[in-house]
Amino acid sequence: MPTDCIFCKIIAKEIPSDVVYADEYVTAFRDIQPAAPTHILIVPNKHIASINDLTEADAHLLGKMNFAAKQIAKAEGVDESGYRLIINTGADAGQIVFHIHMHLLAGKKLGRLG
Amino acid sequence: MPTDCIFCKIIAKEIPSDVVYADEYVTAFRDIQPAAPTHILIVPNKHIASINDLTEADAHLLGKMNFAAKQIAKAEGVDESGYRLIINTGADAGQIVFHIHMHLLAGKKLGRLG
Image (tube, rainbow over all chains, first blue to last red; front, side, top):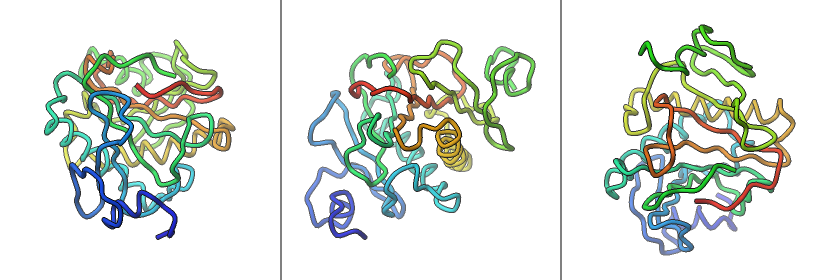
């Protein structure tokens, strides 16, 4: 675990957060600067900096994250109205924290792609 | 395979498309209405309508899709500049085709979330 990774610290409960889901592979918590009425970050418990750093052996963790997203959407009551899942990699996408994270956005009509 | 699913027809090569990647689990092709200089759709070969319909047994396919995204980003020369991966579910997110698909967007400074 990198000592300076904020998401590793959240997973390790060294920094408080509003955790909505956690299991052996995945932790999910509310974004503190929400871009939609529902804005949750879903992260692998293992530190992986970005999709560029994803190995074939770790790829199944992205499956776990998507399955968690389904369950979280249902728990949040947005599964029927709809939700968007976003993973940003690198500067053009605006990735700020270099620990893979999936944004779950919902609760409003979401904008255009790109 | 639903007879009316356009993505199933693309996977089965019944409809032509600009395929950039294909393996046992995943097919990827260029979006015909690109929202960014690079806009590729990555789909599981198995028909799954949406993330709401994802089973735990099929979740690994989302891992395969993300690992394919990493490889495609590199092949497209956008791995260093950055890229955004988006999966839309339901009306609020603007899902139109009900076969899970991940948008890979790159080649420009991408906009805000949501």
